[in-house]
Image (cartoon, rainbow, N blue to C red):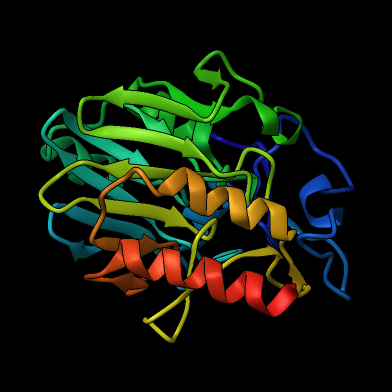
Length: 264
């Protein structure tokens, strides 16, 4: 049973019932004109309205999401790494079908999430697979449901395994993080910290996407510097089919320059 309240707008799960959602009241998100609405994982499952959406998103990457779209609408990525399966980002909906499919693939060794908008029901996922959640300590205040499964880390990088490294870029949120997967030519799993946009020749950087607040130039400049040493060809964003298959490293470098040229 999971009756803890979930915000319908952003998908954050909280420990107990409340009227406000701090995530939505922050300027990077929003409270709908009709007001805050709440549900729970139990209600979502019982409604019959939602189902798992699972499909390949790239070589060694399995997308996990919800149909129809719920809250922000992101999808998670199951990384089929040599060091063990790893879950990048999270979605609010979790049911027996998802648990079964992931378990059949070997389960997961851990979870890491790019920023608070995707924390959602991370505790439910951690308990279902008995694994830790790796979150950057700079975003500790945004956790809606504290739990012993959450492990906070600090600094700019966190090497989870020989082939998986978390890099704190500080874009969008102070703890805004991407995952570098050292496999083949390399891949950057970026959430919307490094945003894949319709023009696949560039990426974008924003402080608030729904409210169109640009990221601070010094943060973007530093993000480019932090990513420079990492080799990656592909970039995978936060939504279905939001991928740049090749040339990712040069695209990030070019995008940082364009951004700084425009805001200078």
